[in-house]
Amino acid sequence: MPKRDYYEVLGVERGASAEEIKKAYRRKAKELHPDRNSDKPDAEAQFKEVNEAYDALKDPEKKAAYDRYGHAAFEGGMGGGPRPGGGYGQGDFASAFSDVFDDLFGDFMGGRGGGGGGRQRAARGSDLRYNLRIKLEEAYAGMQKTITVPASVSCDVCHGTGAESGAEPSACPTCSGMGKVRAQQGFFTVERTCPTCGGLGQIIKNPCKACGGAGRVEKERSLSVNIPAGVETGTRIRLAGEGEAGLRGGPSGDLYIFIEVKDHPIFERDGQNLYCRVPVSMPTAALGGEVEVPTIDGGRSRVKIPAGSQSGKQMRLRGKGMPSLRGALPGDMFIELAVETPVNLTARQKELLREFDKLSEDNNPETSGFFDKVKGFWDGMKS
Image (cartoon, rainbow, N blue to C red):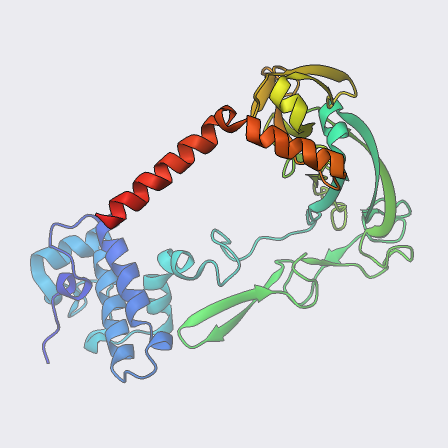
């Protein structure tokens, strides 16, 4: 059976660039890989055909020869391409596939750009998270807070090396110091973290007795944290180098402090603004008056209540809200009135309210307006 045109195999035009050829090969290799097509008996043959085409077209000299002579360019010793009959030895396949192997399976193999698995003689410590709950007043003023963090710290005995004093780590015999081992799986050479050294590339024959060779020990630390004024729930503070100590002398991770501001019994926060719901009596709402309200800084403010105020009316106290983390003007505080209906009335109070109700038919504009709308609605339904 005659061979198919290499450009047709990859699904590209003859004038395709090297990048277009490479992208087409990646797509075809993923699509036709035998491990993904176990139910298709011809998948392996198609996969080899794609690799054969790419091996010829990825090399500028081979591509030029193929463009000029076609498949005859690789027959009779004219080139170093695929073997007669279209077959591939393991070395030929590795050559064809190596430059895109990381792109296709980099994540599975532990990240791209490994290039054979560089040594990790010292590993960076893990980042830590600390959840800190504070009061709204503390978020308003800012504060210095001392926290206790359980974490791994560098071993004082071996100074983080993991070895007894004077001892030197030696190259791992399993991976020869590379930190990774290779295993052949079908078409692929798979790299895995070395089980002997854990990817460090070194072993310690005389480990430190204090830390067991890890170079770090568990210990609680007290840290002073500066909480800036204006923080809110979700604010994240980073303390560089205050996380887990690195393994065998590696750099420490970072400590991230996540702020949670507790709910307040008086104030409700919305960004930089504060809201305070203040109950007022019916006479005060009707006649007007004054009410004293607290502010988040611990002070007091007297607020004038206009005559005829209704529930839900808001009044603003400028600059009495929360400060800004970015140095902008502070927010405002909003007073929301809640007109309170009296309860547990005496007989005399009830009598006075009934008398008042008879005398105030023309003093409730909202009520009159509402029932005028209701009457119009009912009349419209009848017609």
